[in-house]
Image 1 (cartoon, rainbow, N blue to C red):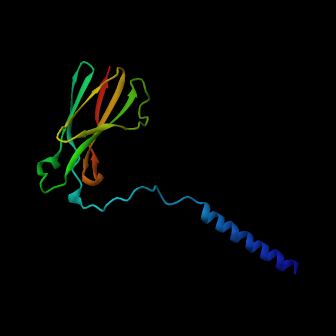
Image 2: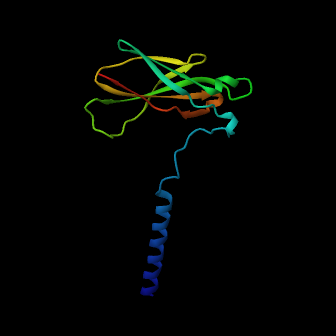
Length: 147
């Protein structure tokens, strides 16, 4: 009887251990609000032709967007979100950096003004915002060194 009791205890131990691992392990990913299904025709084009003009410390960023040519039949563009990342001039080569949102530019504008600080590397990207929170891919990155 002592052996049967040890065997039952061992089975219960492994059963509880397995149940504990099953219920304690994290989920499969990030949860968020539901997103409507999209077709390729619903996704706006990413901005292209990102360029800048510099007057003193004021940077004017401008771009073009292919989705604006066909607003009647194509995806509806509601605005553009501008992202920026910075690194010090003496920062390490190849170190990662994070893009932060600077804000949303509403339609019909296609430009953004920002005042630069000295001795920084600046990286800018723009993303098209469509109807129902549908976003395009981000534009190519524009690099600016402001001494």
